[in-house]
Structures are given as structure tokens and as C-alpha cells.
Length: 100
Image (cartoon, rainbow, N blue to C red; front, side):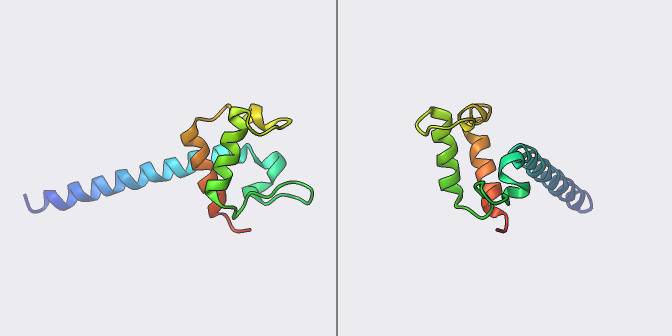
């Protein structure tokens, strides 16, 4: 019995790590859709808004405002509607964690 508990604990930790990795990878996929305008990992070319290193709450609020129509846009209001509020918060956190 003493040998089984460490194996079970290792299995649970491994499964948790895989789940966390899969979640991070999914956020990267969502964020990659932003690269056309906002650059790879949110590092935009001159003339476009950079997202890397911005405040996550401000980024999320902007996206939610685009989604609801409170903030006018040419394309962001359409793109933001493709994400749930939870996905928008995850994407905002991803960009906030990127180096400028």
C-alpha cells in the first residue's frame, strides 16, 4: 500500500500538468488569430496596437466592449463575438504575460 500511494500521486500530478499544458496551448491558438493585426505574441508592427505586456483587465474589458458593441470597431466587434467571456479573459491574460 505504501508503494501505491506515491504512484497514484505521481499519476495525478502528471495528469494535472498535461491538462494545464493543453490549456496553455489552446490559449496560444486563440491568441494566434490576433497576430495578423497585433503581431506575433502581441508585438505589433508600427501603426498597430501592441497587446504584449498590457494590463489584462484593460485588454479583457476592451474585448468585452467590442463584443457588446459598446466600443465601435471595423472588425474587432465581429472577431470578439467568436469568443466566450472566459476565453476573452484567458486571451487577455496570455497577452498581459508576454514581454513587450
